[in-house]
Image (cartoon, rainbow, N blue to C red; front, side, top):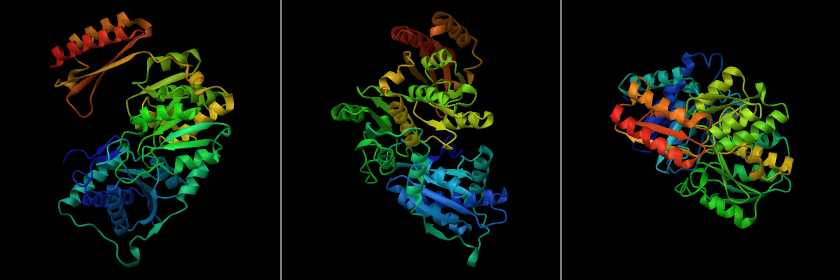
Amino acid sequence: MGRLFGTDGVRGVANADLTAEMALGLSVAAAHVLAEAGTFEGHKPVAVVGRDPRASGEFLEAAVVAGLASAGVDVLTVGVLPTPAVAYLTGALGADLGVMLSASHNAMPDNGIKFFARGGHKLADELEHRIEAVYEEHRTGAPWDRPTGAGVGRVTAYGEGFDRYVEHLTGVLPHRLDGLKVVLDEAHGAAARVSPEAFTRAGAEVVTIGAEPDGLNINDGCGSTHLDKLRAAVVEHGADLGIAHDGDADRCLAVDHEGTEVDGDQILAVLALAMRERGALRSDTVVATVMSNLGFKLAMEREGIAVVSTAVGDRYVLEEMKEHGYALGGEQSGHVIILDHATTGDGTLTGLMLAARVAQTGRSLKDLASVMERLPQVLINVPDVDRSRVGTSAELSTAVAEAERELGTTGRVLLRPSGTEPLVRVMVEAADLEQARSVASRLADVVKSALG
């Protein structure tokens, strides 16, 4: 069996790759593994279960709840809420685990299962590996040890989850949003109710688009992966800014009052300066991935803020933050983690904090985002090559060294083997777009000849 867990839970086409049987089996396996690890010792375990609005989430939620309860876990169902809400409630309610059913920004036919440990943190890799092994062992015939009678889990709808999460979001804001007009694109996803409510309670005048989920339209031409509608709506309504979420609202992208995109790097830059100003940016350091634009790093260097780089993936950003006690980190894609108030990327919280900075300073988002200049970035995927030899090819090393000399201090090269496909990603940044294209094309040719 191939590895089920990726960097963000288990995902696949619902009812094809990710079936009700798998959802039930993984949930039972998770309960047994956490019990073996001592997580439930001395008390009846409790789980929080939520989902995004995908139609398939309805039957997958039922399977997860059945699996957990059959393993002796009491279940609190919170319904349709963002991923970070389930993480928050897992911690706030003192639950032993949390489960979110979502495929994030993926198209509607996909779905996924993400487990959270006590406190609302992502499960450690070794626990995911153990859950897979136990799931596979029992899938092929080994009987489960099942509780009976009063030992089975009870299932309760926890209707207070919505209000409790919104109160948390508005309660940590450093400044109200009175006087701001904000357009919110909810991607017909999990934040369709939460985000408008939070922004409204914080004082903003809110215009919503993509806020009518029907189970089938999630991420369909809207949200953080499709910004055109948000750009147009911000200009049409004369709004101060626009915020876009993905299907499970763990990420946030923005547009300024002119409809120009403000990406995750720029959001990180704005929030880093705001947090340092109020003494909340521990060690004057922000964590980003190797894919962050060089313009971000140069801007932070100019402002006296250190940047720590990690591998691509918000879980690696979070690991670095937790290990060293950093308060802010994120990705260009809009996953922003504000660790004092969230255990995972939280798109609604990020959007609120960004809007609060606009309201507090009286400056436009365009002006605030200009703290960094995005350098032209060219990405070429080179398929059908031996990605395992990226770090050992002498021919490739020579070509990269020559490119780096040519680019100097205002550019950089990154060669990254794909984690899932036989291809290598060639990324080049330069002060000039044509130079970036030329260098990237040249390196892509070398990758083909050296690794093909």
